[in-house]
Length: 123
Image 1 (tube, rainbow, N blue to C red):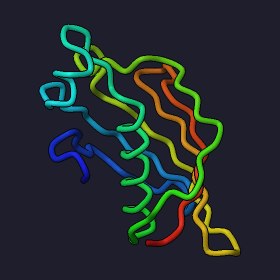
Image 2 (image 1 turned 120 degrees about the horizontal axis):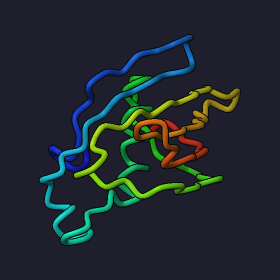
Image 3 (image 1 turned 45 degrees about the horizontal axis):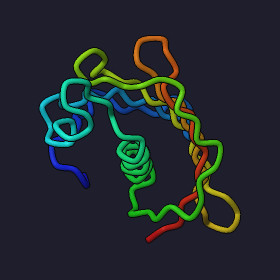
Image 4 (image 1 turned 180 degrees about the horizontal axis):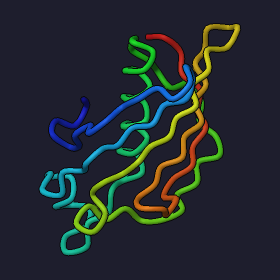
């Protein structure tokens, strides 16, 4: 975990071999939120992207480096004081060239907060 104690994985399950669902709890008291933004904390997009990478690494059991990202859409602000519990759905496919392609949709409650497609390579 790049940011120690930023979040806790509550569950992480494979639903069919390439599809995974993770439930995580953000730590609303983490130092990141003291600066982003005082009195109105918002989860930084780059932190969400890092969480997706870390979950993907756990799923494929190898360190990864992002080589491209596309279709990054932040749809709703994630305030850890109001919505600390997130559900991340990942569709993970290893391509013929050994890259790992991920499509993610992240939710709080039934609200879509983030959609992301990215490609990683083994580190």
